[in-house]
Image (tube, rainbow over the protein chains, first blue to last red):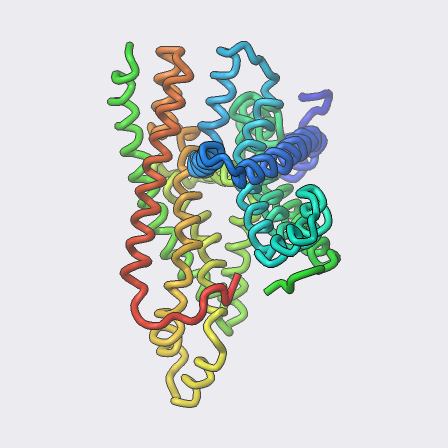
Length: 230
Length: 221
């Protein structure tokens, strides 16, 4: 019995069906964590990418080093770091927020590289032309760089959304009751791990496939403006 | 306790991490070649099997796979010790991602070369191993390098099935000392150093492989 739903362990099939509503509650947590984490990654990644283009060398180098460090160290350890160290500095967040923050931080290192690649793909000549035309920096970014960047970065950003979705179960380690956390709890109470864990896998599989298909559709629907894609 | 005293247990854990990572990268690469080539087979059954394997392991979270092999499989009478389970799961995951790399690189070999090979009456096997592979393998190295780093980061999860790797040791050190900031900073730095070494190894292999003309870079994605 969990969240008011009882399970029925008579056969694997009835068990699987009876725990579906419970896993559904976990699925919502999983999706929410991925959504919050992805929002953080999109925004913070952009900040990192822009800072990396800073004219002040120390800022650019520090950001480059930070990005590389975050990219090359495990999410789980970063999660533990945030979960145990932030409270030492008086920042006490709920486990869910800490988890979403860790996800967002790790993926902002990835997205910043994507943004950087997108900005770098705009040929030098266009920047020079913008300068020659006396366009402001904001104007250059808004009307020249960003519109050409978007079709280039959407596929990569989409892939990261899918892989982030697949990494959310790690949050169950710091007591977040996502799908995997709940499946483990059901396993502990019934001594039946096979069905709940298989169900989690079976729910993830179509989810990631559908997500990939959606991203592919978005990618095709985007207008391809400016410099040709190779 | 000062931070220097944390080093001994953390280094012991780092050894386990490196061992698991190297083992699962090795097996993963073998699986990647097997599945990547099988995927391109004209035999429907073989390529279908490879497709299912790749989709299954790419489409589900590693932690779920790990727990499934660790907690669920023993319930139907198949059980391995934690280290074997960890290496097996990581190999299977790396193999599934690597298979796509292998396939992509093989598909990027210009078609004219395959036509030339056919005109010269080379067998399919000869064409694969002596024409396509030597060129494709160089193109595989950068994505394989990324996979190796991803694999290293993924090894942290095996601490959750009671393997005493770097993350596991960090957790137990923290529980003893409650000095979270120092312990986790050292652990992160440890992973970073191992990652840099991995990158150097991959770069070295790539350099060794890069003899003779390769087809233009960026010919595939």
